Image 1: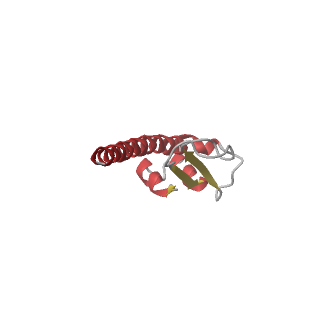
Image 2 (image 1 turned 120 degrees about the vertical axis):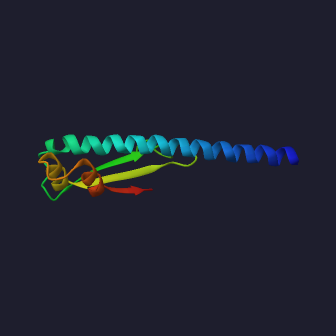
Image 3 (image 1 turned 30 degrees about the horizontal axis):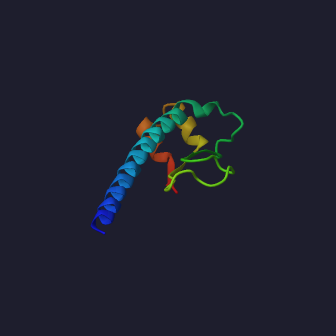
Length: 107
């Protein structure tokens, strides 16, 4: 029984480490995408100034493709109003101010 409990604790620790690594990768990707939005989303001319650009970061299979492949999927939604993108492009917002305009939801 002691070996089982030790194995269980080791697996829990490994799962927690893997979760932290996924979170760190997701955070890095999120930062890069926010900067890409700041620099390039003004090219989305089909959107009105008060409409939103939204990016969904999801770990596992794409939406509509069935069940998740991971035990604990991590998803984030990034959304920003196009007006904020235009303000950044025009120099009315710094990159840090722009980042504050991006809503981030963790699912």
